[in-house]
Length: 151
Image (cartoon, rainbow, N blue to C red; front, side, top):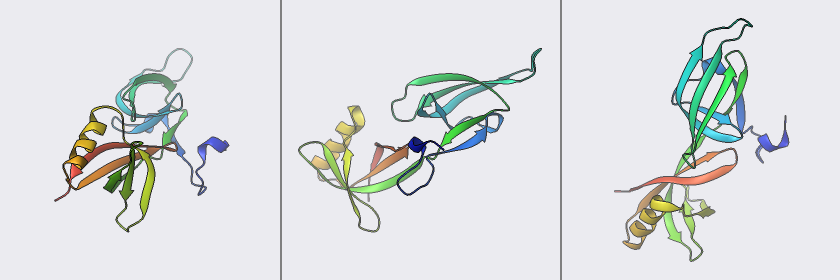
C-alpha cells in the first residue's frame, strides 16, 4: 500500500470498491480528490468486453466537477469520509478556530473556511452565538463545511 494513503494511526484513507457497486450520493476518489458522485451511467458491453461506468462527481471540499470513465468490473478508491461536530470556542487573529469536542478535547489547527461559510461563522461568533461547526475529513484534509446555532 502506498504511504500517502495511510493515516498516522495506521488506518487507511481509502478502501477499494468495485465500480459497479458505486451509487449516486456515494464517495469516490477521482484524480486524487475526494468526490461525491452526482451522476452515473453504464454503457453496454462492446465488441471487446467490458461495460463502462461514466461518472460525474463534485469535489467535497471545493465543489469542482470531475468526470471519469471506468470499466465496471475494476476497483476504484473510496475515501473514508468522517463528519464531526465541534463547539466553536474562539477565532484567533490569524483566522484559526479553537474547537472543542464533546469530551472536552481542544482542536486548534483548523483555519476558518474561505468564502461565505467562513464569513457567516465569524459573524455568528462576533454576535456571541453558540455555534456548532461541522468538519468534514477525507484523504488527510479537513475543512469546516457548515455550522448551526446550538440551542
